[in-house]
Length: 152
Image 1: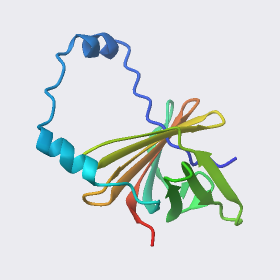
Image 2 (image 1 turned 90 degrees about the vertical axis):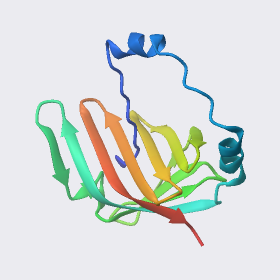
Image 3 (image 1 turned 30 degrees about the vertical axis):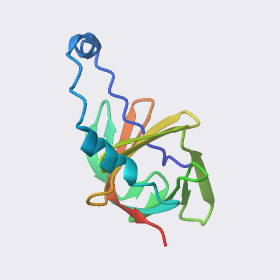
């Protein structure tokens, strides 16, 4: 199983109660909401990740030359219509991970899913094509940085 899924689980012990007590943010102006609604999702997006860091609870964080079992640069296809994140490992074996949640505000999109015991989250910007993919499993977090652009 590829370790490609991404999940940023930020569970802060004391932070949850502080979050609950924070005042609600102001609603964005209607003009901004209309602009965000006008921008439809592409059918699919090609993503390339070129920088990866692996964080271990005992060893800290270090740069890596692979994203799971994929050498850098790691290529992924996000297919919004089928709700899947697709990759191919170095041996040519394809892998699909289901996208369970897609949300967005303005140019930012956030995708979430699980793949076996791995939780993942991907955030991408339609404004500058930047993307971040984070996976979490047991005591290890992998974060990758790259770009995503609509497929042709």
